[in-house]
Image 1 (cartoon, rainbow, N blue to C red):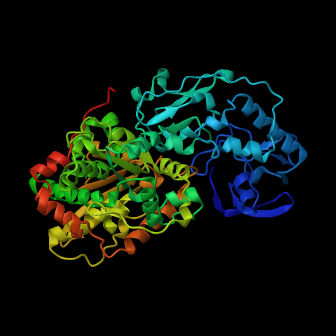
Image 2 (cartoon, rainbow, N blue to C red; image 1 turned 90 degrees about the vertical axis):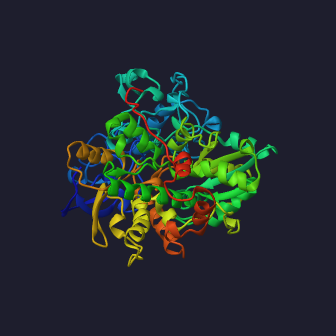
Length: 579
């Protein structure tokens, strides 16, 4: 729908006049005057479908009720959102939805956070005049990351749009008509045999419990309770600016210290920071880029930190894999170092070391189980929990998150720079790399550490950076739809870049599929701002100046891209277009 800011329209909503630009929907106009019109299928970051019919309103220009999410103020008369007719219609729609939905809220992954459950409570539905008609569908458990429980699907279409329009992976779509209408994969294949990259954006927008990440909290509790295991945990940058939302803190609040305190109280032996291994990634990736530029390597080089992106390029653009950095993600670098350097340093047998990751990303659950990720001789990262799963454990332990003290990470794998912190947002990897590469190339400190050309969440950003007379052209993108544009430019020979950053999820890791539910573009902005505040408030803002990284190289790895560094911190990717 096209908004025309030059043409204004005034209508009355529940007797309140509201003036909005032409092209505004009735639902959006109502919000301007503090009136919430309910919906299940509408999401502020997605298109309009009007599938659920919950947003019905009265319009003085029509004898029939209208859906507010897809009807514009331009054709509307006086709108009534709260009349006996409207309330009854909405209740009936909800009762019909509930008749086709299992009533097992206590066992549901979304209990307490289900939008259908919330609406049923708001409309005081305590029974149902309609007989249950839902039919059980087996849960799909064919992959290590996602669960599909389509018995609970309300056919709102949000997941399909996230998959097809935002990520363009087309792993799921619509099938059938009328009562046979459903959301499924092509030919009813399991997700593991589809183009799915496990990004979890479908999970992030699902209003009910039809899609969710595999719950690994029991595995972590079991490890913590096992006295024979030394259990360490790493926390991704984007988690610290999102976990607070689960406990009522303002959006984007920096909850690092409380998060560390919570993890200690859960029973982890050591609490470390993925910012440390993000700094390590910059060292390896930055030197890899310089080597490619000096020695005729494949350019542009593309970042490899995002596992959903790696899955996408392996399945969709396997011929471009030589462009992808050989560096593992910070998560996997951490696991390799924890089970070699740190375990040996502490005198802990490698098979007794149990590594847990707290990530904003569902695809990380798949990544840690890849057969290539066992440089230590064991699976380098044992379990990945999402931000939501960590919140679940904190609640289970009875911890009052808001009253926890501020505590610091453990050393030596807990010291990270501001450059490592901004890894969690689109453009952060590029900016962090430039802060180090600039000094390595020029031998000079950059005039400013804030390379603002890298910042923001626009679809594709381009910049030419001057490394003291050496121009380096870079591109930054987030969301796989935008990544596809850049990959097609490489195919066409039109990508005259040296370095490309790709983040799978909109906004980068701050918008990961494992972050708190009901994430929107506005919320991602707050989380981005939080990470840049973390960076700004740190004295250490460049990866190569991290003293613990310097010690790691001097004591163990020797130098970036060394033989040992390649054994532990680099990997290879493969053509999986037929898988």
